[in-house]
Image 1 (cartoon, rainbow, N blue to C red):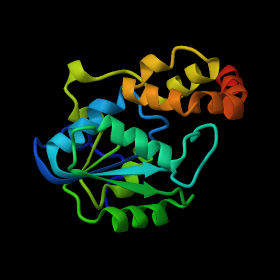
Image 2: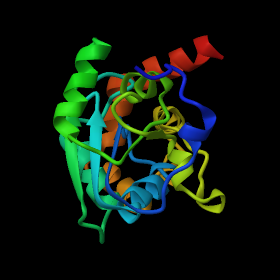
Image 3: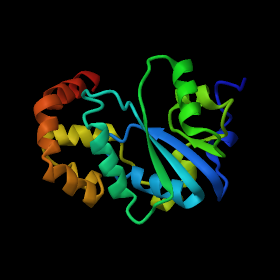
Image 4: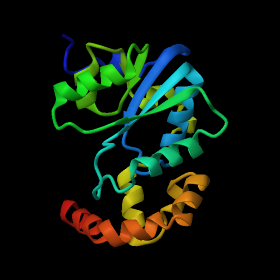
Length: 195
């Protein structure tokens, strides 16, 4: 069993080329910070396994369906074909989720996560690095999904936080309007309570 707190060295550097690399994130929605990470996953490995976490959830934190996120990921990865998209449901049971990820992803040379809990679950099975370890500092973008969802709930400013092709996709399917209608007030109220 590994130390549940990965060492900074182990958690912050990544080899330049690998056979198989994996990552699970919610991609709610795919945003500007995700793009350099997604591209680095494909560029650094022969094959990237990209998991859509919380595949079975739909709520204010997970407003976009699995097919919608799959479309967004494919748009962000245009021009790359060395990846597989894998739905990864929430099980509300860490050890069972760990076993599921190992079953779905198989052997990996590296697993990428920014989530310390996920790192603690998988560190005995895979070498772990944070996404920032894959992206050179000039290419890093400080955007989080919560920022995009908050801007979307407010009705303005979200388009600059996501890649242009993802913004077009969201707007063409009116997913921003749906989000505001279904989760906008809750998102803004939660932001007010937390702030």
